[in-house]
Length: 262
Ligand code: NAD
Image (cartoon, rainbow, N blue to C red; front, side, top):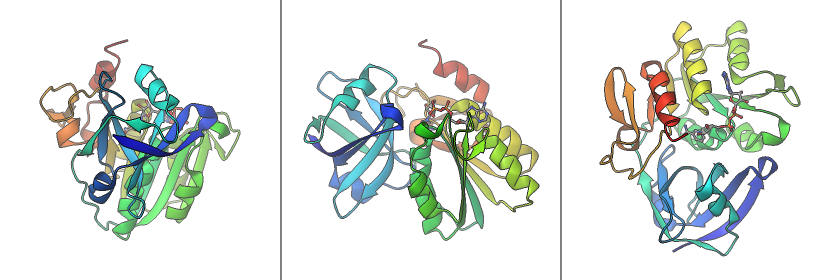
């Protein structure tokens, strides 16, 4: 059992942050890797990317959006409650290199995943620019944490209630207009956002990585549920990813697969 040592509500309660006592995972996990949890004996397997770890406390923090039965159950847990199973770290270890200026782009709950990845790029000695976007001010998460990592942080809201009025892609346009040199983009968020970012950075020839979260079941490469087409090859996000060259991802197919159960 893995006990919950801290619980917070973010973004009008639509997102929840749970800090869980898991010293072995905290010691091994690298930015961008994920865990799979089962709330109880009969619970479904839920894959979630880790937003941060605390080595001193032996804990990891997951931030998730309440979208269905399992995430609603997870959100109902309180400090002191426990999660039955926690498996991880899962996914490839990302090798962060010093490339120069890295622009990290996060949309909605994807900002939580971006934050951990940006720690990896910071450790490698890169200059970081952050672009984070949400529907409105209240839905924005981790602004202070991103501010601490980035030499510049641009915030967008769809309704203009905070920061720049517009989408994260409008902030990219602004950087390009300012002739800021960008060596690498890392984007995490809704598929439609990652596709729009990739369409734009392809034009500017900026290498772009994306973090994918397709439907995932066993997370060991056995079931094939999370398959994605990357550069016309079939890859499994759980064991070959979850990070891929965004310019090679077949987003249309992935968007169609992700809506299969609807
Ligand atoms: P959202 O719909 O509120 O969008 C967040 C932001 O993305 C918007 O504010 C906007 O700036 C940008 N965006 C949205 N549509 C866009 C478009 N067409 N063009 C350009 N920019 C656009 O996001 P949400 O409701 O918080 O959903 C988050 C999504 O992120 C979920 O679908 C979830 O599955 C996904 N997610 C992915 C990961 C991952 O590892 N890839 C992790 C967490 C969440």
